[in-house]
Amino acid sequence: MVSILALAIVLTAPHATAQIEIVDSITVNFSTFQGSGFTPTPAAGQLNSDDWAITGFSTGDLAFGGTATSGDYARGASAGGESLGGIYAFDVGGSSNNALGVQASSTDFTPGTITLRIRNVSGATLDQIHVAYEVHEYNDGDGSTSVTFSHSDDDLAYTAVPSLDTTTTGATGVAGWSGAAPKSTTISSANVPDLGFFYLRWSSDDVVVAGGRDEIALDNIEITVTTLGTPVPLLGSRATTLLILALIATGVLAWAPFATFRYPSAPE
Image (cartoon, rainbow, N blue to C red; front, side, top):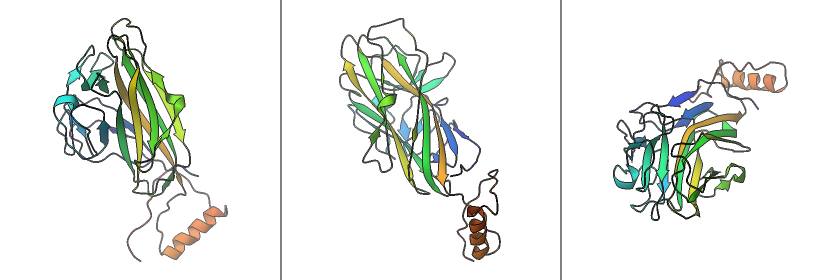
């Protein structure tokens, strides 16, 4: 089992329209998100709906590839202290450190889900997926809210990871964002084929309903993968390539993982 090395991709471009793809590792943050909604052709301040699906808001669900650029899905940028339900770009760090945030209400996101879709373009089947992220809370309500994590390889059956469960503070505290709560897990035997998708989901609901709901936000989603097998370059004919594979498998040749290669698609 060899991890294919590649440069990390930080997805912060304001006009990025490409679907989120992974070779080795990516970091998804929201520094350019302004709470302006979701569309498959995002403008500045928006997120790409090819990557995100959301359920639980009174104005209806957002499917992958859908468009939602007003109302619950576009509450704008905020430092926190909101009461109107919806999606916000919350500044959780005090210096334009925006995160993907939610203010829940009696009709919004109770319960609700946020799902991130990622495409494997490593050239091989994914074996393990390591996921790390931050959960932020703004404790301005006496109620408490849960944030849980699950994953899927088909967007139908999801596997929960209870060790990552988070519940916001119940009693109202000093207004402001709490320090980030770091979470991480490794998904073993992922078995995601090249050009296939995998899905990461954050779910939320009321735990205690009393005197308002806290704001929550996700940030700095880091994903690192390892693959089954190691693609090698085509050197001469396919017979030569197969010979190199056999020599590596028997230990006659050593594989030096300093570059990323893809299996050739062109005929001989």
